Length: 359
Image (cartoon, rainbow, N blue to C red; front, side):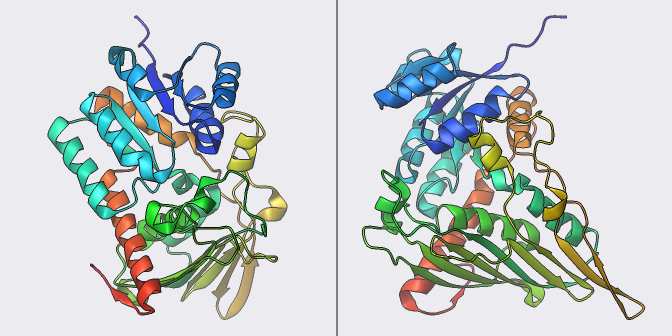
């Protein structure tokens, strides 16, 4: 039986997202290959050719479209304000698209993608890789199994400490209005995770602040979401936290789970490791979270193993969607829900008030 031809991906943008996330994950997914990389930077073109000698290196996406029959997927890993223009061009060329989170810079832009995908039948998915963080999978598993009882509160954080802006970092030099800052970046991950756990929020309150000189986007942001049944999620994203809080603290009426530290997959990718390597996505035993429950009035503390992280599942599912028509890993409609919350958070911060949902 003849082997199926691989899904041929063209990656647009070869900064951190393209080089450390999309390219290695695609290359390590059975049935996929990095067929082309698009970047205007000469230095990144050289890096891309070194990383993937068999790939075509282009300076423009139009060069991909000129030979569009040779490509099955376009991956958009460029700054946020370019996402929709590039994605729409790919849809119009008839090529399936993966767009980096949060997908766009407004819900109006997301509507354009949804309409284009529906009218053409071209698949579109959003790269929300942190749905496959091991710590989040563990929290979700504990909630789904009822171990914590009825959930009352979730605390979720991405906190770092960097007083000086990152040289050349577009997320810091781009305004919030144009898709820069932490709310669109790390914040979109944490909002997406909260929506997966609890559905759409009923109310949103936020403090969207930029504190460092020379920074256009927010760098110290807090978002509070109130869901049905009075479930409350508090989300922090900050580059100004000399001491970081727990990554997760999930509280229910029967127990609580607290987890410190970050999922290991991002650092592993930056160090050149790939899915399939020994211990990929696994947590060190000393980093397991603490589960506190009560049995017959007695307090019980346990350290359950963190479920393995699995970023590779995104592209495994995307490959199957292209081949067989199964659902894409993250639908654009789900990204729209996240974008609505981001917009509500910005409005809340601007007006210093609680925003009732839906807008």
